[in-house]
View (cartoon, rainbow, N blue to C red):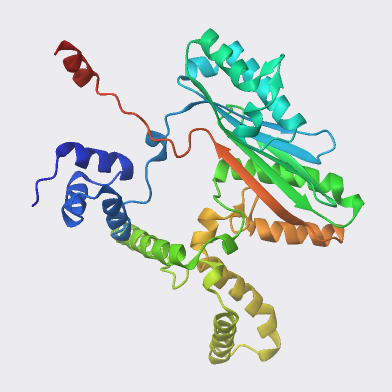
Length: 355
């Protein structure tokens, strides 16, 4: 084996939760390239994903502001260095003041925020004053404000711990649908806060990404099947497809024809085929959209009715209201996502100071 530093193996293990020897083998196979090693482990079904909780270190607050008539909403993330400061009254006042100015002026960038005035001074100077008072670095990391276009509403939700916030914008055609959409949007925001969809729809996933993820998903399911088989439990279905993007009209038509032939071979009366096939097609689509169920809001099964996807919930609500209900915008902030954790080695720090 190539000489792979123990610290690199440890880092890969922390990122992937894979076994120590699997991590070392992955690094050997990829000549020490940790990004390629992560992909290697995923393709072998040895790593589901990076352990995000270990990688996200930023503290602070995610906050949401929604207008009283639900035509505008803002979401903001402000980071502090420690959780202690995030609970400080001065910091929370900063978040409240900043959220108000962002919402009132429909701001969607930190550059625009810095140009605004608050308490008679430029926001940038106001922030520096707060940093000096609190004694810890504070960063306004990201901001989004969205407004309705035509008939529609925007609602939001921020989890009680202030670590996750969501905005959802809905469009409808009838004014009578507004209140129902306000309530539904809030409930779907709560779903998204818990279930972590990355994008709104499968249309936002490109083919290269889908094919890459398919390899990892299949390897993961096959690996899990080894354990399920050992335990004598039902095995996972290994999908041929993982996203609605892959299910072309010709593939769906071919599957439907196959189901008809199966029913014929089973001797089922032709008169009842049309009652059986829709359910079987629905099952086929569900089995063939594993990636969508993990990553897209519309493709996930709704936590308040796990027999329907969010897309199907919208269809049902449209039918109930005799309207056309759509989600047109989806934004989710999770505190610190994408920020790498700085792991402190206390012994090494002390040793360095002694030199």
